[in-house]
Length: 82
Image (cartoon, rainbow, N blue to C red; front, side, top):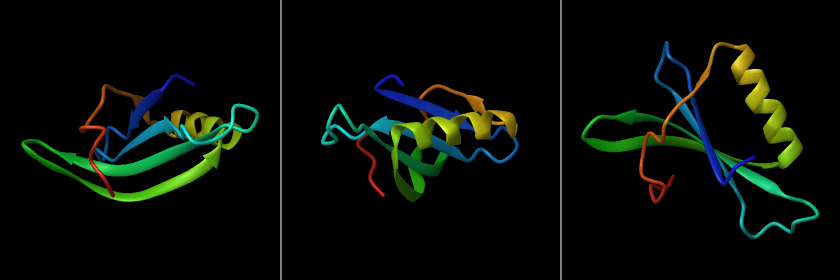
């Protein structure tokens, strides 16, 4: 997985940001998955953060794609916090 990847549900505008946990060791990489909803001109509503092993994060990404979610451009500033 790249440094970060974004995916959203076109029907609801819910978005997930997958990004690497820089503190995880290379032999056991972990990924943060932030969930939220962007609002134009306003800060996003960030709701949850998961901390997953890279393999589990990849399975989640694939499951979302099969469920109709689509990769997208970044939807909020990476410094936004939950």
